[in-house]
Image (cartoon, rainbow, N blue to C red; front, side, top):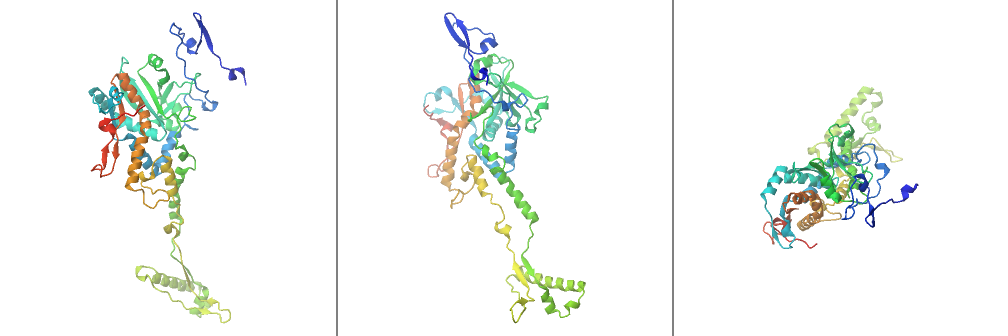
Length: 460
C-alpha cells in the first residue's frame, strides 16, 4: 500500500499571522480567504469502492443496473404483493396534502389550516396532489428512492415547477474525486439497459443540501434534480430498502409467483380418475367357457362391453350409493380368489389440497416483510382462530401505521417544504389523515386527524 493510500494531506496557507487549513476548492476555483476566515469545508465521506465503476458515467443500481425495474416486475407477478404495496401507498398518501403557517406551528399552540391563493394556484398547476405526491409515495414504498425535477423562474427568484421523475428512469452520476455526486440522469432506456445509446438522455445538476449557497450561486441553468431517500446503512448511491430480502432470487416473492405455475402444471398433467377397475382374465374364462377359442377381435368386444357396463352402472348422480355385486371362485385348497373384479376408488389429491402448494406462508412473509399488518390485507394472523383480525385489530393497526409513517412523509415532502421557504410562502406541508375510532365515540366511526383542522405540534 502506498503512502498516498494511508495518509491524509491537508492544504495549509498563512493568513496574516495565522496558519489555516483549507480544502481543495481553495485552489480549484481560485477563491481567496478573507478576514472572515476559511470557507466551509466539504462533507467527509469514505472512498467509493472500485466495483462501483461500471464503465459509464452513472452509478449502477443493482448488479445489472435493473434493480428497480426487476422489483416492480416481481410485484406484478404476485397479486398480494401488489395489494400490499397499494395499501401501503394509500396509508402514506392519506387524504392528500394540507399546509399550515410555519410561524404559527412554531408557537406550539393549536393552529388552523392555512389558505393561500398563491400556494393553491401553484399546487394546481403542478398537480401536486394528483401526480407528484402519489408518485413519490409509490417510489418510496418500493425502491425506497424518489427523484424530482425542480425548475426556477427566469430570474431564479421563484420555483415555478416541481415534477416527479420515476425511479426506474433515474440514475445518479458516479462520485467525483471528492466523493460528491454532482448529477442526476434521466432516460426512458434505463429499465431496458440501453441508456448508454440514448441520445436524448437528460442530465441535470443534483441539489447539494450540504452546500446550498454555492450550489445555487453556481447553477448555470434553471433546473436541478432532487434525491429523496432514507439514509440506509451501507448506502453509497441508492438507499437499500428494508424489504429487499423479499426480492432475492428464490425468495418469498419467487415462491409465491411459482404457486400458480405449479397448480396450472398439475391441472394440465393430472389424470382425473375416480376408479381403477381390475378385471383378471380368469373372469372371462369363467364367464365364457369358449374364451380360449375367441379371436382377438371378439375378445376385445367382450372386454369393452363389460367395461361399459361397469362404467354405466357406477357413473352419474342417479347411481350414487349403488352396490356392485361380483361373483368369483375360490381355490378349494389355497382359498385364492380368481375371476374377481376389483374396483379401487382413487383419492383426488388436488381436490383435497394434498398436492397443491400452500402459499399462505409466502403471503404472510410478503405482507409482514413490507411492514404491513396482515389484518389490513385480510390475512388471518399466524395461529389465529378469529379470522383476519377483529374490527379493533384492524382499526388500531391502521391508526398505528399512519402514525408511524410520519417520518417517511416528512422526507418525501422535504423538496416541497424547501420550495415553500424559497418562494417565501411561509407554510409547512403535512399529510391529512382520517383516524378510525369506535362508533360509541363517533357516530360514523371516523374522526379527522388533528392535522385536518387543527394541529398540536409535538415538542422537539
